[in-house]
Image 1 (cartoon, rainbow, N blue to C red):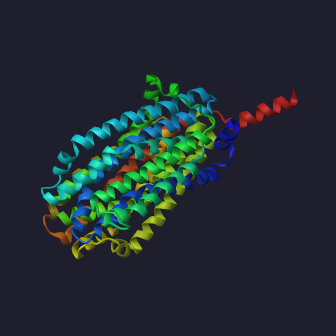
Image 2 (cartoon, rainbow, N blue to C red):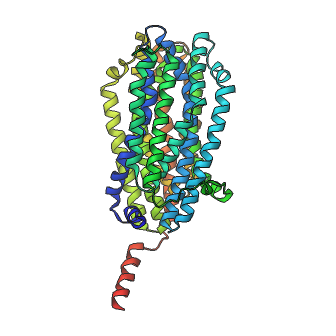
Image 3 (cartoon, rainbow, N blue to C red):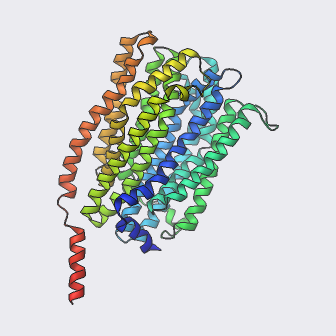
Length: 475
């Protein structure tokens, strides 16, 4: 079984391998976006205070993103290190990597629980003075943080399954959780089938139950199918060297996704200076575009183990193929997404119970921010490639540029220009096109440097392999 897994990552044609691994990961990541978009759709259509509830979920969203960022980033580090260990023929080390990833999951959950108990209200209060939104946001966020064990451990099992080439099982686990969430949302929010109408709290409970369902399913698949990895509590014993190795790779991924949280939080504050409806419009757009941006993340998570595995084997040809096809497929996904959102912006926005002005602002955001999709996709792909080639610093720099350095200062300046004129909010949306465009220029320069230093100097693995086989036959 071990050889089967290794031959898949090391011998299947890279274009087919990326599609075979990437499609389940793309579906998995897109389904991850379901949790937030489904909650938003149902709460916005509540009979009373629907738009206020949507605003509350928007304010809570950055912390949800931050929890996911830490969990997924840790999983990404474990994924790359585990894949590399298997590529080097060291299943014992791979098992210890998996065990330490689960130990880190426990630590992450403890931190989320503490925040849910003691920090949720103070956090929401930094973004609104509306007492109704404050109460709704605090209630929703507290529940999601205190019972975040599902989303944290699903992220771990998802990455462990992906690292061994079994991404289809992580997708099944994601589908299970998404289905549970979709079914429970209207029941718990509106009070169907004899349940009390819990409103925003119902959305939170549906979310965490769905996440737990995904985690339990992921655990079952990990125990049954990841046969290369030994499962024992002793492998969860903290190993400082392995934890450092996980975060040497995963920290840039954590910061990359955490910066999304920081960016969204900062944008909430900046846009709130214009009007509360602009905050709601941006938050809603952000959740809609996550379906496509998360698709790029899914393909990135296929690129990383493929390139990392062959980096461990020093297979120059397959590394270059992983980079070429990974970038090509990412750009195709983002081009399709850009066209779809541009064409169907108004129908997408009409799913939510928005006032006329808020809906117009949401459609405006879709039309203008979506123009940055091709640049954004390229940046996401570059980040996965950099992580796989142990160029975490370069990946981190791209994250900082595209989600902080070139966003919040520019958005702030544009918001001053706009003032309270809602007809000119489109100027603020141009921030994202500028940020992604400048960042991709920097990423391309990094790629040239990394290729020269880490790839071009490698020997031709396939030529050496053929020569070795020829010598063996001659002997």
